[in-house]
Image (cartoon, rainbow, N blue to C red; front, side, top):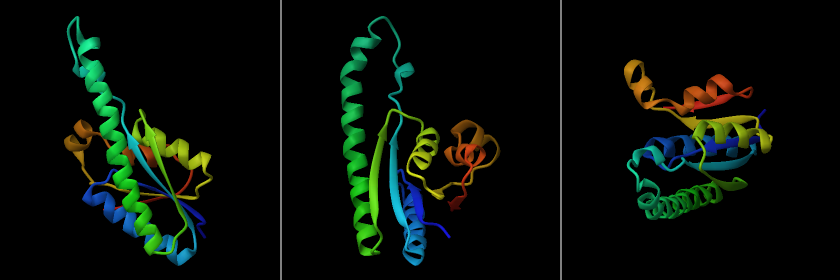
Length: 149
């Protein structure tokens, strides 16, 4: 049925449920998994004033380094979980992209036939204000998406 799952994670407790669910499915199907963690672009517009570019330089470096460390921790945990489930897996960290965009591009590049991701299930104003990467993936992808809550 499915042979290559893309499992997206941000390292949250909710995303961990998606990882566990995706791994259980992959294990039963004998499928391969690609885990992806996306670090969003540095919020450059949060900095104002004439000296913003200079002041933001150190913060930008700290943001990138922190994002890389966090992604490594998250993806190392995913790799261990995959090994324990006896699932072949690779991990990918994508920097400076919106999560939905990165998930869609990677799923195509890797030839994935199912995307697994978690969603808070926000509705109304909460979804409007906070956005929904899951909703964006659902509306733009051509492959099935398994949403875990």
